[in-house]
Image (cartoon, rainbow, N blue to C red; front, top):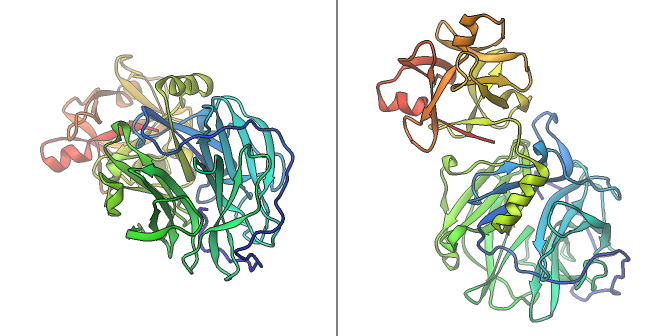
Length: 461
């Protein structure tokens, strides 16, 4: 539940459940297993940006072939938005059910009004994440407390889905609750799933990994783990070493392609909303190594994600349905928290996130002076291009002259510091490359290792 500090709400929830809930709706039955290795992946998220220009509380989707670098779908616009409750969502999660279709769950909350109490979670079903049907809200309890960050997994022993979420327990602190369901239309009475005696939220599961089930959650601004050989409520015990990057929450576990590594994603709950990632080759060890930010890129403005594996065909079908972004972002190689942007019409690299975020979106179009090269057209100022002037990069209106065209044209080459990235050689000053210096963009001759790193960028999203 990416948010920042939130007040807890006192409830009278005990270990014994109340009357089972029956909620009407329409959703198919079935089950599935989350967090397996895949050949591709889908990420569900909502968006927030520092001053709100990139904020949207609908369901957003991105795809990846490695679970690290992500491409937003639908131009980073929502693919579906709630029409009941708070009319917005947070913390979306996608589960593949036993029949191969999907169910989407999300917190019933729009914005950051933590005093808003909903006893419901949003539910959609989808055959393929290209269409969404059967929308309804599922009531998970009848208590004076929230139902945050819902997720689900298949409990084979019960023959039901376990739907877990964060709510305030009898002790006055957040615990992880569970309801059982076969169809996400009706649910059993709530039970406490995990209560270590202190505040915990944002449970995320990896089920049946070498006979052990793993639960990761937010504990005191860190991501901590618990495990059990069963899926019974109350059976999980903490293990391993917690990780954090500042205040971190919203843990998401995903197995890498080929099943060699596990990744643990986390989201800072400041308004910045920056994702960080860790990896391990042995989930049972409970130890994680931070990944260099060069290794991964989150969708722009994304918050509190859920990740599910896809087949290659499903990946291709999603891209065909929702489209490739019409823009790119350029990440600095040696300052991977920073992206190329314009500010007051000057070219520079600044630390993500910032507003207006559209200042970091570029259309790489055929070069104005050479169609085999590229020019950088601004998305936020589409009549303007990055061009060099006195060797510094600035954003200017195309005046139609050959001089402007040449100044705004660059030959894209293999990255000077990493051939899998990109560098850009000036068209009319071919001994000079686009690089940053004191975070300002310019074109310079390149000779040292530092120069090569300064002149290397990842073209992504």
